[in-house]
Length: 204
Image (cartoon, rainbow, N blue to C red; front, side):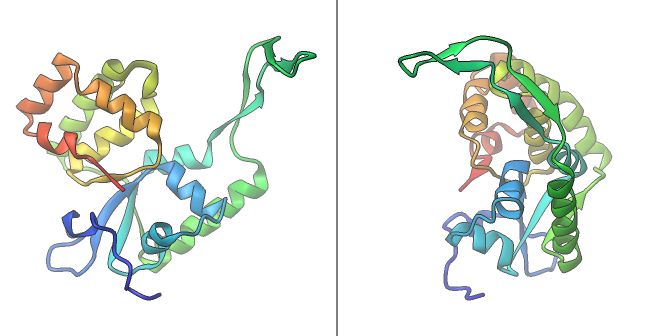
């Protein structure tokens, strides 16, 4: 593809490997699903998934979440005579992608890995693991329902590795902004030297 389009945030990304040419950004499962399942195509997504100057990184947990996403089976809502939604039952979920979508996601992820475009980070340095284990539950507790435990682990993974996170999930972004106001979390991030990075964690 043409390398004419480059997002403004690209130059601020760390190098993927020391002495290499490509930079790296962490993505969440939503970004991966938008591309692989929905076929999203715009300047930024084409840059992310096609430009050789950038490598996309996800954790093993994020891949597992992508392949076993929870879908709404019944919203528990019906519309009354005036077309207004009325709660008639609980919202129920079904686990996992349908078999065909799961297979497609698995195959396309595998192709991206084979191309060197997608890197699966399944291990951490001991120091990173210590940071991750401390921050993941603290982020979830500080953000409450705004950031679930899975998303909290994605954020903690990016913080522990000091790699920016590309996400279009406004609930996650807003939730973390609120969570950073929590005194206990703010103190811990400051102790770890991550307070400044946490404030600018998201790109895009």
